[in-house]
Amino acid sequence: MANNRTRLRGQDIALTITDGGVAAGDPALVGQMGGVVENAKDANNLAVLHREGVFNLSVKGVDGGGNSAVAQGDKIYYVTADTPKLSKKATGVFFGWAKGTVGTGATATIEVVLSGGSSS
Image 1 (tube, rainbow, N blue to C red):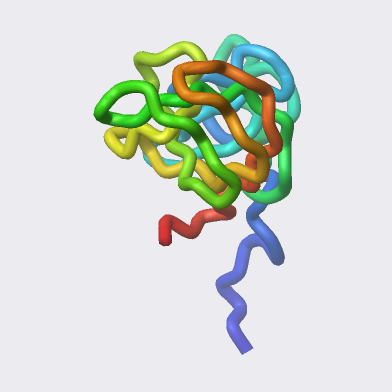
Image 2 (image 1 turned 180 degrees about the vertical axis):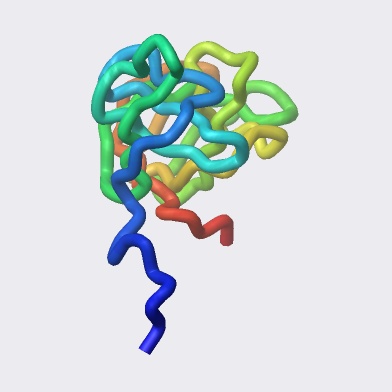
């Protein structure tokens, strides 16, 4: 039996946010790990980060080549320099999958299924 486990599950853990996470419900990064913050980050950039679940998030219908509609099942990436942070731009950090759709070049709030650590 392994006795070096520190947590049974690691989906909701307090971490130092490196980008985003200004308010509760915001997408955020911790290095190359994405999630949604439970609470706004504090003065030390610490917040609880949800790593699993489905969240309503703002997504833009663009990819690396320009405007591109988002379809259900499309991979969604977190791009630090963009507003909103989430789109189909594969130059960002893999974040999850679209459960909803967004028109070409449009921005919409859709359900996003978090990756939970998987980048496949």
